[in-house]
Length: 109
Length: 120
Image 1 (cartoon, rainbow over the protein chains, first blue to last red):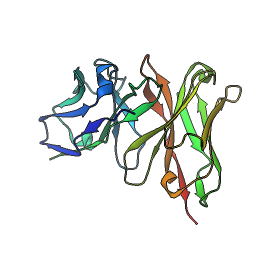
Image 2: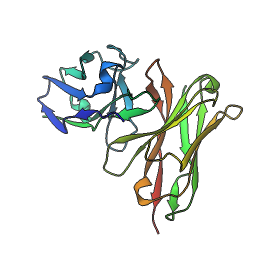
Image 3: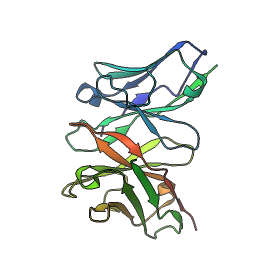
Image 4: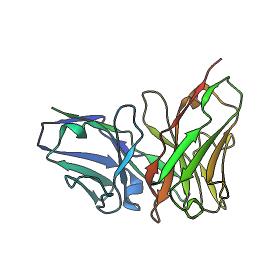
């Protein structure tokens, strides 16, 4: 089955820009979706498809893909963006399974 | 508004069974695929299972295949996860999530989760 790899942790100064990456072979075939999870809360969808934000997600969140890597960028990070972020995509091994990335803890300094 | 409410979690002994439910409201449940996702304490998200909108197709993670069964009752707007032969590795918060998108789903709505603890 596919795997999606993320950096365990990144930090960003308040108001600066940070990109979170997600690597995996399945991303050559399928777009990633991205989820924000604050402590004690359920995950929340923040990005899907080529670069689509659900209603209510701030415009400082953007997404992109290149080859086997998907990226979620926060431009002008805010304190409330401090959370764990997970990517997800369909498994590319021919079944209809799904896989989550290993997760990235974003700290806003 | 869209709402997903899980229930059925609790403490269960190793080797025993448990069934989780996810009550859906605020949307036409019968037209959406649904997933179960779990999260062990202090760990990341793990995809568990998918059921198509009509229950006609089901898919499972290797870690639960043969032990877990996903099902739905569209007349009751409810999703289920039957879990058998539970082990400590199944201890987690279990979330149901609504599927959107093709050919790869994304999960646009999540429940609040229900905690399953496997312990003697």
